Length: 310
Image (cartoon, rainbow, N blue to C red; front, side, top):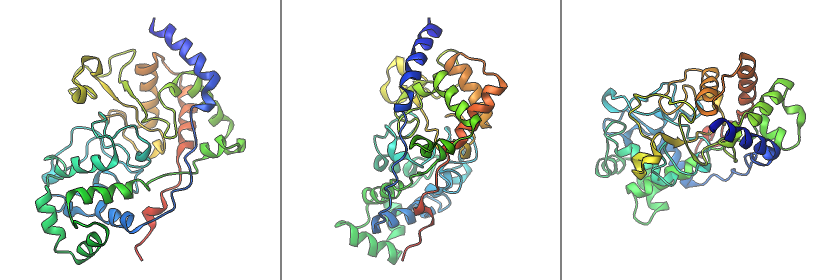
């Protein structure tokens, strides 16, 4: 029954697929004092208890906005319990974190700062540190009536993260009408992406991150997985093992993959997605072409990453 349903779904989607994905708008050029303050805070390890971990430690701006290990390290060398998702294009996410427990970027910022495994700090400690820095004192009092607070820190970091947009991927150029932007193999990969049904979950501007889906639609992925995903938020039985569908933008640069970091390479991730999510054993040629297509989703590194404060 599942395979029959998938067949009809894929047939329907193949007809309308070209309308399901939109290119990233190229209009995030305004850089304000708040954005630059947020960038400095994002890179500042003083937000952690022992001054060793910054937001950028787990969301490397030079590594696709993600981390290169399955689980990131927090204070005192503690290991996290879930893979760090990319912060690039996170402004387009339906919610933040794999389980969607934060509605927006501002709400998301506070969790890792106060999480005992990650940055393990608190408002009192952070404010005490930042009040000793004339830069922060000046900037916060200029931008916020109440100066340095955890609320304002999260607001500034969120303003910075909103500018972490990666436009001008070759696939975006293709969507805008430049058919020469993709090779024949890449176009074949896109056709497979549509016809197999990948696009049923990976769509929208972010090519994902706009819905929750069960990990293991056709075959249970990992019976020993203790992370119950969306269930952790809703406590609804039907939400067990549902996770936010990850964005595929810049996917080549964000290995390892999945919430548990269990796929080391992009090819491995494609094979597993075919098997667990689509009920398909993909051929080596299909995997190759799908992977070639996915590599066209690399966009420009956000300009704000390189911008220095004047």
